[in-house]
Length: 212
View (cartoon, rainbow, N blue to C red):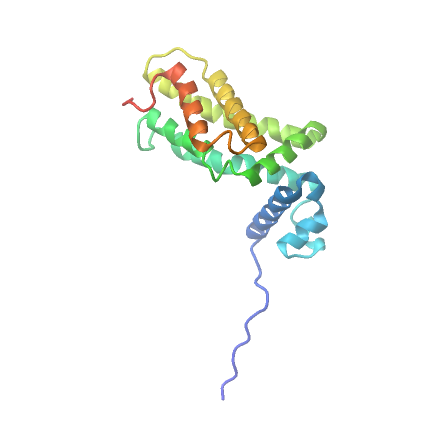
């Protein structure tokens, strides 16, 4: 009788996949307990790996924290902006801006677990110079991309605006509503996010639901 081929018990992951898994495990730890839960031992356990494996992928706790910050706050939205912030992308500038705004205020992105992560990271930025530098770089890049799309709409409609200030104020509005929702989930719903965001932009750009 032919012997059955043994199946390896553990699958060897690529370095990129393993690194991404560790980042997601760290995000889950932050979501569960804030910075108090951001411990290398806990992250390793959450990822199902040995503690000794972490230094192979992250030289320090701050390096891992920086990657968590990038992934949790900017990666998904920046990718969506990059897909739309392209003259070859389908739709008018106004249509592409609407899709970006809808991505920024997507309920899956503004879910309660993410707020715990964001508050933990924002608090750490104040006392961690390396993370503060990463925040400055990532935030400015994000703001520049959002402002470029706002500016494209304004230019097409022949409106003279400060696109960077509009982008910054829009993000502050969304962040404020998100914090208010954290205090009282019944006070602010997704419809409130969308209405406030669109009304603010339309003060400067005109109606976004009309043909551009």
